[in-house]
Length: 220
Length: 123
Image (cartoon, rainbow over all chains, first blue to last red; front, side, top):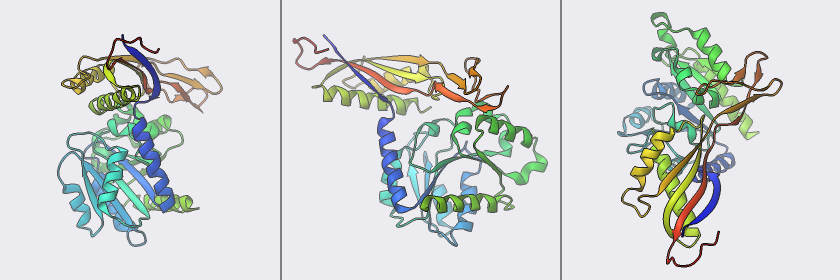
């Protein structure tokens, strides 16, 4: 005879608890935490290079970089003289809160003003996993085509900030910016959109100021 | 493709529940998967077979209750929608739309054969 037990918890309850503990830790430390999500090649690492190059003059910044294999992305950031730690997921298509917890212990960043978590390049799976971040950022590059937010609506609905990247390519690609922004707003009326180019610096100041404002707000 | 990680998490949480109730062999697990949960029920079933194969839970059934999305506009009421479509705004009035159901990813029930059988189950 079998026995049935009603459970009624979230499948990702363990991740939710780990993320809540991280969030508390980040509040105590006064660290702003941003979770960056996009498809592969949208420019997460390049955007982070340009972002931390600006912010690291005045702030202690650390980076966790998730990839299935290789240390290449963390090495790119370390070349700028900034602390970066590579999380190798060994095949998993997303980061989870326990990986972030473990990586922070090993990375030994010390006190940070801002922590950027570059998720594994994927628009679907990372959406489900809370990492204790203050907010999610979704990147959409001009070279990806302008119908992506319809194919992957969940991340556009949940990310507080959408960055349209590679704006320097606007003159040479077919991409209806106004329509895309209108549709992102339809998916997420409260979200913010920035047009940026890490190469030319377009929009980078506004994006960085946005981060600085939220850090100040977090520290009250 | 994170159904594999989800399946492993369902297995881990189910085995934990069984252990909390005196231990035994997993027979059936019921989960709820919402239409907006970004999890494909069919892929989850395949992943479950792979996750349980070769473990003490091999052969355990995964029952997936699919929960269609229900969205409601605060002023216009329930929003009619096409299955599979995400409608975050009720466009006739432009008010922010509430998602009432469809984001579930829940472990509902765990059924197991208690160790050292022979006694009546305590339901």
